[in-house]
Image 1 (cartoon, each protein chain N blue to C red):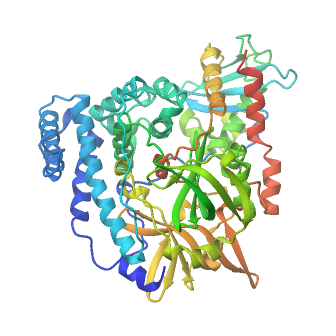
Image 2: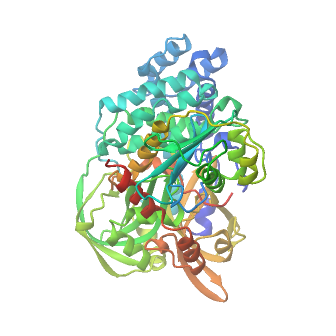
Length: 454
Length: 163
């Protein structure tokens, strides 16, 4: 990414985005207080949200839902429809942002060619009634009992691999609600976040998994790894360039966990993927054969269809191949600004550890997305001069989430990557505290082996 | 474009939970603040097959400790046993003193002073409920992993130590 591209990214407001976000904020405020007691102003906010999708096929249903809910007749169907309207609006914001980013970068993006299956799974239906209860009550009215009311339903979801997305989402939301209860006593509510999670969960209760549309072969050049984690889930998502096609792809593996397993220990949960983790730790390319690819650009990783290739420096790949690589389409239901995670390469900047400066333009680092499971630190960002990262947008601002940096440390240019510890920490100090803490995965698996099957 | 942080109300990625601090799990594999209690499971020092279920009620500070088969802990004679001490010590490591004290509604500047300020006495608390929550906790580690992308986890960035 060049200074001129960074300037182009911020050149002028995006028409309609602020207005759309205001409408969403109105809906989120209604959800804070609960749909059971909306009052005039909040009813108007729901009607306005429905009005914004008035010109779409969702329009009539959304208008009816807003009217009925405003009149106190609240059904699950109406709630799901409004969740859909909010999602559609954020989808438009997402598209405007991604278009701006793509044009600034000169990146070409494939058109969507997949299909979104529907689903009527009864296990998911059980969770929908909890989501309805939350919406009727409002976040402010959520107490410990309501926060925990779906625990059993979520356990049932977790046991069903097809519903893992919904299960991991709801488990994360429920944990936040439980820990925050009684929520009425909280000074500030994460209204946007919880409404996001609520709306996404509502739609996921009705949709099925995407199917692979093609099988691909070639050489993967990893750019970096993004790490996601909540108390009971961890996911690593590798961004890579697939050669010889020059396509940007991602591949992810996720595991369930407990809150006492975190930081560098999450890699151990994924030890059944030695080829993938080995490529991260040793900076290797990967040869893949007939790997299923989802229409959103996600490879469904299968160790049996992959082998380690020759070594590959992510900085070389990013410097030479990233600007010409083509990007995948975004699945329609995933169009939300939080999912924008576009790999970019920036070099020759000055950094104070929080913000980088390049040719008169500036960009903040996303320090909230700097995981403890890898060696990147704010100190390294400060000393860095080149970065492979993901462009993120939240709260009206673009930020750069670093995946790897080149930094001057003791007069030496070091390359440091998020995935460096994929096969265990390489830093002596971390290794020591790691050894001291014992191995939580092994301890809990021993306890599970002894106590679970009695 | 300024580097100031937007309000938490407007952030999709607003951080709600602080990461739990790493601790050795061998002695106290499970501790939680739930159902109005600080409760957990303490491995027996002498018998690898045995665990103790220890809990302290928030507010009233009644406590109990028994084996997972509901046999009362021998160390519980009018005063908290060593398992309850371990429970509180590890809870303070995991969640921080402030959170534990606030949840229990207890005052103290260390795990030990929390224990000294416990005003309640032994009280009947069902071990089975806590133990089954521990088993459910362990069951997470038995769930198969997946290579289906979980797009929803973009809302949950790995909890770094930076604030």
